[in-house]
Image: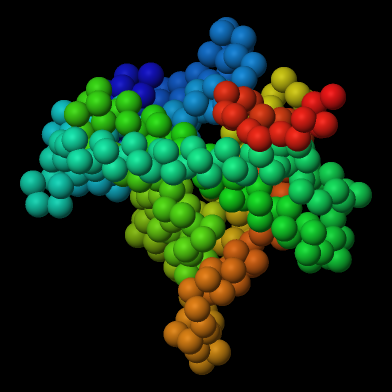
Length: 360
């Protein structure tokens, strides 16, 4: 499906933009929003129902196309497809059909070929994530992914301010955020290795240890957490808002995070549709809050106190402070995933260490 929509995008949007006429604009609009978008959005729903896919991990794999495909369609429509991908039909097909992000050379703008050294590095990272997930699953699975038992369930929206700043709530959210980060890293690395072997091209690393190494909110979201979706949102939402609609940086940032929230709401609705999950604005609230954090960094990051913190405090403390700005609301992002048993589905084949008494 990614390859077929890539053909439509290249021939009827990217190539049509070169003509810059009213008819070409109409064609691009029709193909983008009348054909490609509906195909990408509806395909997972019909595929999940037709194949009766029950495992939430497999459902998430099916949802990889809407997560990247919608953004690649928008970036092409607004003229912000990366130059290397636009260089030729072959490049664009490699770019659009690889859901993990092909790595292009900076000078020749051609896909970088996979080497044995690169594959070895990928496998070592995959092994690192495997060991980390086994350790976290050993700790969290027996406690149903809430290390501390709280009166309010993870998927609730009824948390009071005191609940949000409770250290038990924060630790629970932190541990699940760490599990989600490593799980996303492991899954994308595993799929990337398949692309590396089948395509013969290198792929970009999607998750860059955001929970343990972020130096600011913008570093977390812009350079470490799911860089694939970040680059898509930047080209599909942020740049059009700035350069086509003339909005300020702050409005463009907020629009980008709200769009991310909408995308994640769609993912949750499809992922958990058989469970009766309702649209409750959770992801829009969560990503909207983080958009405000980025805007606040732009507005106040130059203040003396923040400059002092960034230069004088150890990196571990800075990272902790960065994570604390978002983790109290983390349950809005992954609370439904906990209650639906997503992590059990994704990691059902992984071993974990259990107390024999717990199995009686």
